[in-house]
Amino acid sequence: MIALADILPNRATLHADAEAATVVRDIPTRRAVCLLLDAEDRAVQVLAWANPRVGMKRRLAEPVEGEKTRRVNYGELVRSVRWQAVDSEFESDVVHAAVVRAAFPLRAGELLKFAQPWFLHVDPAAEFPRWTRIERPASGRDRSPSGLPADPGRDRSPSGLSHAEDGGFGETALPLSEPGGVGETALPVAVTIGPLPDRSTANRVIEVLEDLFDLCRYYHILLEAPRGKACAYKDMGRCPAPCDGSVPMEDYRRRIAESAGVLRRPGGARELVADIEREMQLAAEQLRFEAAKTLKARLEKARELTRPELAWVGSVEYMAIVTVQPGLAAGDAKLFLIGLGGVVEVGTFGEGKFGEAVEAARRLAGVAFVAQPSRLWPENQSRDGCATNAVFDPLAFGPVMRHLFGDAKRRSRFCRVEDLNEGWLAERMREWKVVPTPSSAGPGDVPQTGE
Image (cartoon, rainbow, N blue to C red):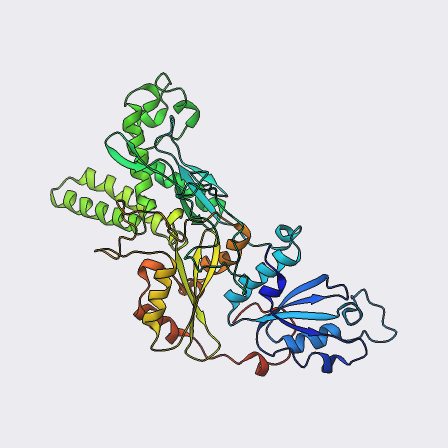
């Protein structure tokens, strides 16, 4: 369990005989996450304020004499406040979640109402392989590459973000798939793909894969292979019918593995679209119009896999996403690295230091670039020690969701670590709009909802 003192190192004691304006003078006016405590040091409330000083004055104000109200008298209840200043809405969400988990460990899941990601899973080597949607990716091994049991209790940093001195996300590296083979083609035994924003998107991706690769739609019939009765999709030429033995199950497994390859690596869907476009163009040039028509329909399906909400889809064991957020000083870029296990703060970098920022993020992700930087973690490269091979933590990943799958402005602040470069950082920094500081933005004690 993370100590609250590590997440919120600043503290102010409130004296009952002092006026609210006096007791909060040490509290900052900049954006911060605050924890209110009672006389027994028990957590009362966690708040994210744009201006904590103004917020605390209002929170501790005494009720109007004679007024009937059900409002809690925080002036009598609260005896101290802990806080940590933050520089962006994203950082505020991450630290807020860490404080809630530490302050209310038994109710954290109930209090943190973040949307949760969905994932797709497939094991091409299974007896009857198929795509399924899952809410929590599971490790493909019970032990780490070192042979030691996984240790999910590693310390975290004072900010409440995962501790990363060893280049990890606070968990022992656990590969989510193992190198294996189906027939002559070496493929992962199991692949987990994600993250996806919701259940309906996960369902739609499975449907698209079934149409693109002519996969079995009726799993209960596939279970009867090779003595099943083929469905209508065989007659339509849209399923190879492994259920009735029309094709060997080994061939069907390769087809499943091919579909996994499209989503397993970043850019796989775009490559599929480009391949189909070339085939369609060639068919048209050769006056094979029926083939071109069929390819056009397939192209429309393939383009569905390139939609914005699928931008982050890939094998989750290698997931490493970078976000850049504004720092305290004008022109500062504050970088965070996102993996299955949560969020790691990379650091704050001023203008002219973006090269250092890129190197720091790549180093933290445990990334080793080879001849082709766009082909991160090639199949023949050792996976041991990859920083993003962490155990999925839904409460730590939850704060990321509304930013990663938010509007275009929010999404533009994220990129895959292999795509991170100085030019991208400089472009993002030019996009920052000048906004009033919390101290000059006017009074308000509503938890901040935007920048």
